Length: 226
Ligand code: GLN
Figure 1 (cartoon, rainbow, N blue to C red):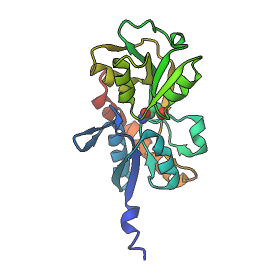
Figure 2 (cartoon, rainbow, N blue to C red):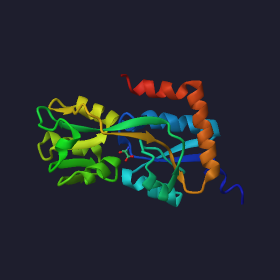
Figure 3 (cartoon, helix red, strand yellow):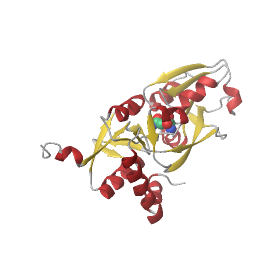
Figure 4 (spheres, rainbow, N blue to C red):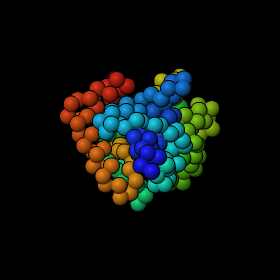
């Protein structure tokens, strides 16, 4: 009957990886962060109830593809490769990739990464960039924070990760720092099931409203103070 699927229709299921502050993280058992608030604002605009599914970053695209989630919102870069599996909304913010090293490291620029042991979060753009570094050994971790811990412990020479999570992780540890030179600019967007043009249109419309009203910037400023 139509009643049976009534409740399902009213939810907006978001797949994320809540280990990526300030975009998504757990505060006790509460989900917090920029992406969480954007998703909530979109759900409100669409008259749906937001449901958050926390999973490994490299499971998010599969979850969207299979319909387990309606959207993937996880500081996800709108990479052309990923368009084979999902569609993306318009960009909602810009980010960069940075290198984290131990204080006093000889690595001061991206070209110094050659031949080094690099830590990344599995399946991220940092993983892709590390893979391209000549003669480098790439260690892949499930969480960005685990890569940063390995760096602190001297197990690896550098971490390649998004700039804002990098700032958060570096602020929690005395012995590491971010290399000044940023080496890639990326657009974050919302992943949507391929071919679901209706949802894509709705989400882009909601995003546009959030941009025009200044609400999006307000959400970002709440978590990122330059
Ligand atoms: N922006 C990076 C990517 O899309 C990392 C995202 C993440 O780790 N949550 O791969």
